Length: 354
Ligand SMILES: Cc1ncc(C[n+]2csc(CCOP(=O)(O)OP(=O)(O)O)c2C)c(N)n1
Ligand SMILES: [Mg+2]
Image (cartoon, rainbow, N blue to C red; front, side):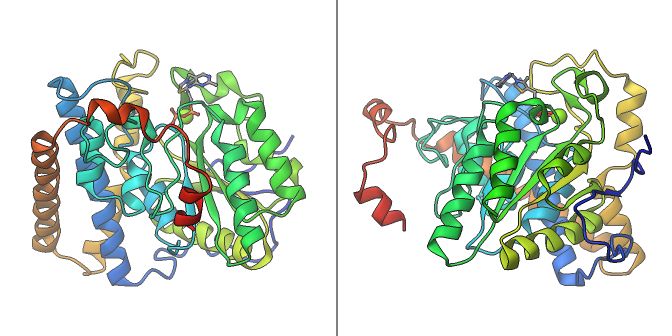
């Protein structure tokens, strides 16, 4: 069988027009690029601080660090508008921040404080922001894909426009619920863009050991939706592919499937010794750091000089420290709040949220 390029491929359902993914700036103006650089850096520095406070035992429980995958979250969420929705799995800090969640609300949730985005009761895997249309944070692999279809159905039914961006991992692609969701989205023409973040591993299992077809986007072709594989560490390529998919979903109510090839710099979770990959492999991927690539572009094109880069870095450092202090100073949730937010108070809550 002829296999597509490992770098970029298009599926059978894709339009045949010329690729623009190689354009270095993908139509991103300098101001937007600086904004996206800052977002990627905010995610990286937030995550690396999470890693530290976890080791200091200030936070606990499950915690999955997103470092290395920032170009996917930022390049895909930046083109969205406030009417659009985002839903993801448990490695959710980066997408929540890219969608506009404050670092304070995110960090306080990790600390289990009442000021957290889920009032301290969700933790790392269950970030949520209803006004920001960030619909979680879900711990069961693949289980939120049918939820994304429900959101897509709601968008279509209300007729006010919008799309749902649904992130999941390469491991999720082996779950039945994902395939049921893809099938229904295509049959019902739901405005959902499915994004498989292929970071090479599902816990310690390499994609090649868990999937008969390693080119994940090819598996989505059978659902007759446009599919495409992108270099997930290249912000420009990610952004350009997303714009195209989101436009189609918005205008034609057409789902799409994007596979973003990326790599996580840290272990699967905080308790992962990482013995299934070599130091050389990790270092090779770090040399293609998505943030480093953007910095290079900014400097080469004289959008920011070294001083500009440094200024943004120190602003982000200050924001992270502020979030830690805010979280440490915040109160614990009331014991009674354990009984709240369990069921939606229908119809009052639903009406309010509309
Ligand atoms: C249905 C189900 N089976 C198993 C698990 C345990 N589990 C948690 S994460 C994970 C790996 C998923 O990997 P992937 O989808 O590639 O996402 P990544 O962690 O790489 O972001 C597994 C098997 C689970 N949470 N849910
Ligand atoms: Mg994975």
